[in-house]
Image (cartoon, rainbow, N blue to C red; front, side, top):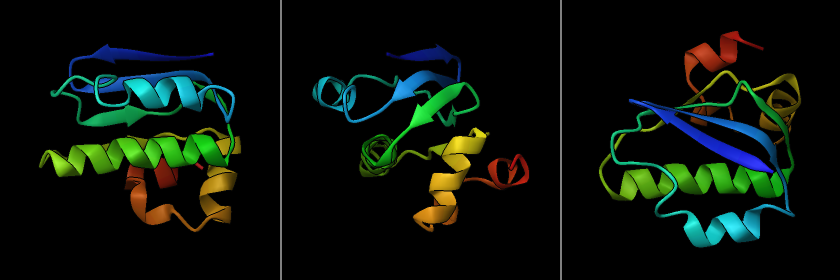
Length: 100
């Protein structure tokens, strides 16, 4: 299960974001984040697989299509390993990189 907790310009994603959760979230992807969200905090995302990473990057793509800036910060250790494995460091802010 995954939760999207929005407070102002920050949305914290918590729980597990895996292949099992992504299909249901995919249907909601256009409405999961309000237009004011600029930062996604990944510090409480306990698990993500490659489908979860793809979903996170889709959220960024949707924001860019709307001419909005969206950054990802504070990935967990497990997520940081996937970021390194898939060479995705450019999608994450300096704050996220320093948190590793």
